[in-house]
Image (cartoon, rainbow, N blue to C red; front, side, top):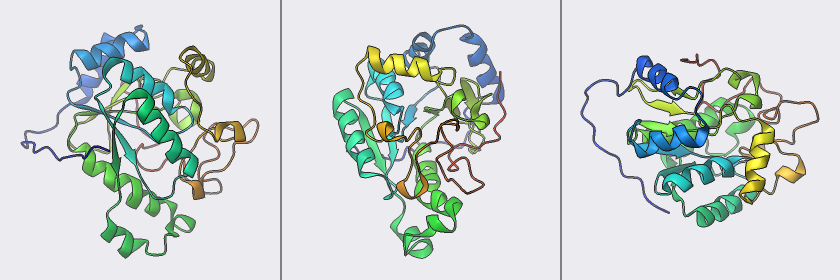
Length: 251
């Protein structure tokens, strides 16, 4: 896969502020996803973009949508070393099918040796495990970009119900934009998109996995549960740390 090279940036202050997120949301109010997303990408309204993808249950929808506009946009995949083998196979299948510019991100070996030598940190400190294997590698990679595209959707959980299409990444002091193209898509629309474009499903979906992360911290979703209920079951944890559950929307 492609290699990510850090881009030197002058310290000129935040790239974007809340006003920019508000302006973009208002600019595209009422626009269909394909229309506003194409404008953001083709008119360079959010600077240098990257997609952050887990290649999970519904990832093919966003990856296909963006690839139809510009398949050269980098797709950042966090190779945590804890993924299901089915996820890695699905990742490779979608990469080839959509001609994706995929970049695999890895945790620092020194960090793992110091803080997770046994590889079992997930079993007693899932937040710490996510920080090592997801948050820190992504933070380092996103320095090179002005905005990231995510696959978050409002129906997935109560913590995502009020998120806007475009927001400021509250975990980033540099004012990076976080763009959620599918935030107002429901399960039926996603299913229809898969059918219309004949997109392959993640192999674990038919086994009851509605949301798919690292294998030790993911179980099947039971009837009546939120789609993300199978993530970190038994822990007071709803996000890996890449997205903050209490982020306020900018409308």
